[in-house]
Image (cartoon, rainbow, N blue to C red; front, side, top):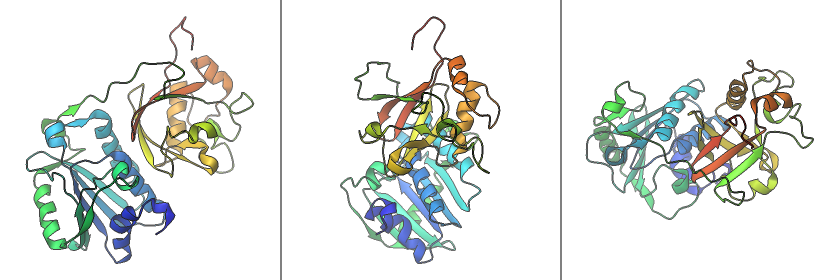
Length: 321
């Protein structure tokens, strides 16, 4: 099994059928996360896999609704991966029954079902990539596909203009307010390089070299923090809600896990910070820009294993940071 796929389960149900000619993956599951979908699409891209479609139907929103951050995360995936030869769609069940404890992964070739798996592994990184206990086995493809097609008729696309008439989109989890230095669910990361300045060709200025996109950027991650377990490693993705109500998919990468990036495009993170700092597209970021804004670091709160809150708010006048 290739190490880059993170687990033998992912290899068998998400990659092997492609080698046998399958071209569309249909997923019906009770629970799914945008980080898992982002990881899968990005991994396909990085391994030169294209002309693949991924259709996801999520069941638990029927009873529980979906939090705003996850809803926004799924919608963002429709935007950022459409030009790499991989089609992605996410739908929500709005009529019963739900798939319950069974998750279905069905592969088709030219719309004909050719391989199917069913079991307890939901479409989350926690379940598929982190080797959580559970069962998954092969099923008769035609039978599983009929179950999936029935669910299609009872679902609505996450980016449909009327989706909120059918599905409850609830507020995301309440953000912790603790600022204690020993809070294990909070980390503060400097945006400066070791010399106390912004990196000339690294960090927020990663793209300031050669013919690169000048917006490319990463958040420097100290080795101690990378090894602490606060962030997922092995290129697993995590969804971030920002203090100004944006959502970003991030991951830890580069040698020694030294950088937090936006995997869909390294430029997305740089665009985000330049907008916050009031700078032009691709402009070189200097320390004075951060000083004028009011802070030189960014704070992360861990909500759960795949969702975080990122605070880059400027301090109010008279406050100390």
